[in-house]
Amino acid sequence: MTQGLLARFPRSFMLCTISFLLGTMGAGCTTTTVDEYREDSKRLDLKNGEAIVVLGRRHAAQYETEPDFIECIGDKIGSAARVDVVAEPEFMDATYPWFEPRTAPLGLKRMGKMLREPMIAERIRGRHIRYMIWVDGSTETTDREGSVSCAIGPGGGGCFGFATWEKEAVYEAVIWDLSTLLEQGRVKVKAKGSSYMVAVGLPVPIIAQVQGQACEGIGNQLGTFFAG
Amino acid sequence: MNAVVPRLRQLSLLRLLLSAALLAGGCATHVEVNGSFPEPLSQRLPVTALVVFDEAFRSHRFENADDGREVSVAVGQTQVDLFTAVLNGMFEHVTFADTLPDSAEVDLMIMPVVDEVQISMPYQTKLKVYEVWVRYNLRVFEGSGEPLADWIMSAYGKTPTRFLKSSGDALNQAALVAMRDAGAHFIIGFSRVPEIRFWLDGRATVAAGLPEMEP
Image: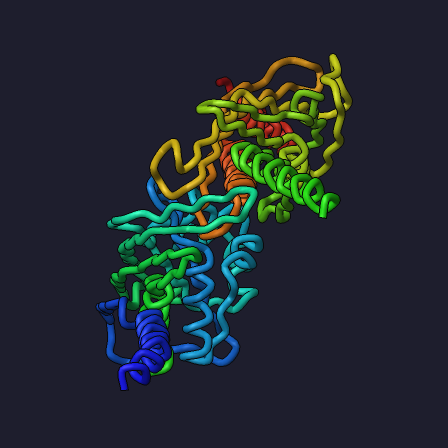
């Protein structure tokens, strides 16, 4: 009986550990809050062939809205609302030098002024861009504890230790209607999650998908503006 | 058996040397900035220009070895590519030269000079961004060789740190953003430089057959 229990223990322990790891690697470690503000409860008008562009704000000194986060939001909106989304690098190259980090318009007043410049207006209308979504924010590591040490030598290498860190993602998106030059809404997302690294020989990371969850939250919510 | 022991020792030595080489290599970052620039969206000025990229500009390399970490960033070729794309988009006709002539059959001669390059890495600033600053001295002469304008223009670029992305890639990206920033400020700011503005206004007046205004 005792022998049977001992024989079963390692397998059940392993299964338990794997379930715990898989469970933790899911959404268990991240909490996401999404707030939105709409000018109007109606779906935003988007005629056939019209597109939107999602751009990141990069003028702040201490952080930078990540380009891959902007791409992720574009993909989410595109699939949630089935609208054409112009890729950020394509738009920035087409309108260079008017939407660079230090030359992009920060408000609708200057955007309107830029659209009165025929060559800029023509380039934007040529791509049928009706809405411009500006995203500002970043994902930061807010807390870190513990440590993992790794060593390598002629006989091989390995790691030992335990570390945990917390990440917070805060982003805000603003929707500009380029045909009316009005702000149509705002979406704010805050995601927080803890990640772990356990190392006994090999390091096993259990990563909270904080930025991924923030993208999911803000992207799907922005999609509802266009999909109704 | 006797032949196996020296072979194992050789292998161990090889591993040790490899580890040492990896550790030594990990402390040095060498970047040849590489990228392309779009054609700018700007009105071409009815001006013929000779652009001078001298050897110092073409082969400019920033080098630093603070804190025992060696960093070198070569921006020469990329800034030549940038200014070539930008100036071709700004002026009706552009030619290039390696040295500044005394005079030339053009309206303007433009010579960019790198005044200073600075970089900062996340381990220095504790920020999660790689940053690159470039300060240019832009010298503009009339075709006769007479100095027309001379001003300082700074450019800045940063890129966030990435999990498992090398500092070389991040610095390359930050330098490209700085180059784009330089191009943007050159295009937008060129005709706002007072001496250039006055010179362009004078040309427009002459072209329209109107008397030139006093400054």
